[in-house]
Image 1 (cartoon, rainbow, N blue to C red):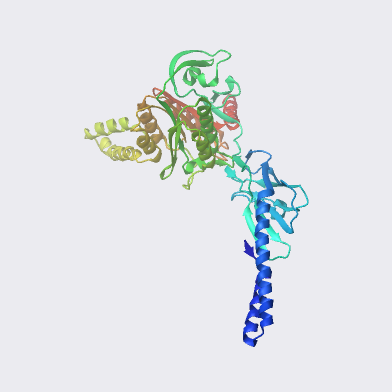
Image 2 (image 1 turned 30 degrees about the vertical axis):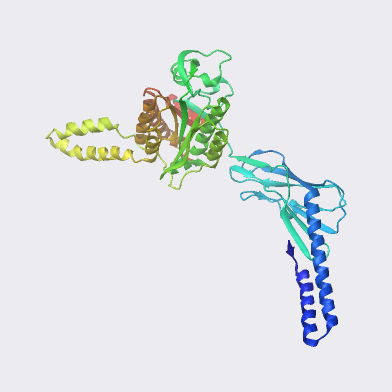
Length: 482
């Protein structure tokens, strides 16, 4: 309870009368001071009793029209107050909806209710916008009770039966393409989520797809090698776990708003989480920034595991490192570097002497891969695992040497490795201005992806805007015809 300036004015008058009575020896003034003090005390006790009655009989509810919206969309919120029983009190009751940080909303007046104790029910509707992705829980409304004489004010959170929550989802990229060499590997099987890859299962017999098979049974490697969809029969394996390694370094910023590399890979990762949730499979995730691991969420099947992973993915943003604008060259594999350096060291020719420093530099680069964020994350998080790990690596084409060594490392844990790569040339705003140059970059990317797929137990896919990829391939085909 707070007292107002009117209370202090009355209390000050009582004090003045008491002091004056003492100074001038006027007992009558003491009676006046005592009367004012007693009146203030009675008013205070009555007000406290009234506040308790209001708290007991006022029912406040909040409701949202939709619990899941896209960022920057507006959603109506209904604030309603009901008296559980008639109440005749000489007080003013006001209610204000309190919203968490991160929401933009109507003016305070639009979120406020004035409750007349003679009116059984009042309500108001206002809108909120959520500019950033994430989960937001609406706070309990604030109730303010003020006596009509303006002496006291009490503010407290309303007693509500439930607290609504809002989930703002990032705007999804348009025309998500998941494929190999420009060929899509998802749309042929109907409207299925990208993540239905059948993880947590031990592979068995491969056969041709028949109506009724689910997308999670699809064998992507067998499908890519044939002209028709193929599925693999699976047997449940209890110790198999799915682990996502999500790269959100600065290069993932490339692209337009809502259609960056990160936005496309986010949808793939969310599909894996959705699939694991439906099948109650263990899944975890490690996110990787420019300075190393940014989030550790070990594999689990607890009910909170899946929404926690979804929240992490929705909140994910590229780290602050400036994005690269062209695909990095693919360095030679470590074995080739070592063998070539050893051969050159045994030769006395001027040509060998001239090349030797370059291969020594390459050897130093190979040694540095072990300290790179993605490789180091896979190494440290999988080394001690005794389970079969299905590793899902989501990254771009900017760190090819590191990616190749990371994939080789992930293969050692008895599980399949799926690699999802975003080709930089298809995300740069002006990446298609020179068709020949863009096609050369895409061809270089495709060669890198194919090399990964040739590794045992590895499948590598391109993730890109389908319309941009189709435009590039069509324009290149037209150029070749001309």
